[in-house]
Image (cartoon, rainbow, N blue to C red; front, side):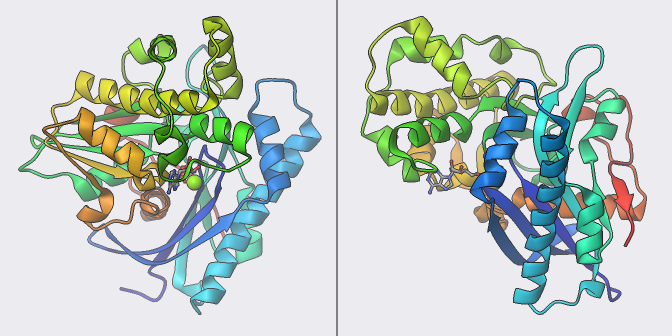
Length: 369
Ligand SMILES: Nc1ncnc2c1ncn2[C@@H]1O[C@H](COP(=O)(O)OP(=O)(O)O)[C@@H](O)[C@H]1O
Ligand SMILES: [Mg+2]
């Protein structure tokens, strides 16, 4: 290995909980996680991001300021990690920055997806070459632009002896089907933490429902569950991807109004947990017959979610991705470090079975230090 053999992956997901920053080394394309740093998103920046995500009119100044501020927060995350670990920036070949998705619209005549967090600022403030804007090239090639983390899942988790599913439970949930015969597919199954986080924040001013304790204190309401599952997205064919523009607080409030029943807040949280599990299981059943299901993302820490999922997938082995050697909190950030390496090495990536892109392509724009 030469001197600059480290890569850094950066992402802030749909939950907008914070910036995941992972320092990674690769040997034969297999990642080794060297160090990590999580930088919480400043509440006022989070508010700006949420305003940009909402489907209303926005002003360009808010957009521009937020773009730069996210870029600065990402750069600060990198610089803090390098100081904490006493790592020289010259040893890092590239940063792969996913950015922050503020809008994802993969359908229609002019599909687009928008990840902000100015890469110029990241390069300038870290002194490290930054690769960013991974999703738009995929869309330009006819793909959904998402999900992309399955590229890493295929690289690290595919087995020739077992059919596996990798399930990422972030704000949105996505699955990667990895069959032992080498075939694979991936898609977003629907909402995950985004709705549960919204509901607990509204009623208890907490960021999330730790271990699903509040959900476990209630009882799922079957009529509401049916109404939530009755959403066009779930019956769409793959490839498909979604985000906050569809599944958000107002979406839930509209469904509640439509139902018109008095339901206790804890029972609604229980229903949202059940809804997350049911929509994931539905997505798995339509596309896979896995023996093993490996969970990553913040949802892997939600014990009520994990046991509820295992109960629904009775004969399958449900476990955290850590049992395959990768900490569930860092899979996505590692994926963007890996993607930066692919871009720097100049090789095209085959996303066709995941996003529906028409050909293998080189993803990401390079901002040289
Ligand atoms: N101990 C836990 N119990 C329940 N939920 C958790 C726990 N830890 C994390 N989470 C959930 O995971 C979310 C963050 O997951 P993450 O994978 O970072 O999502 P994203 O990729 O959308 O940022 C939090 O918003 C929270 O809802
Ligand atoms: Mg996150």
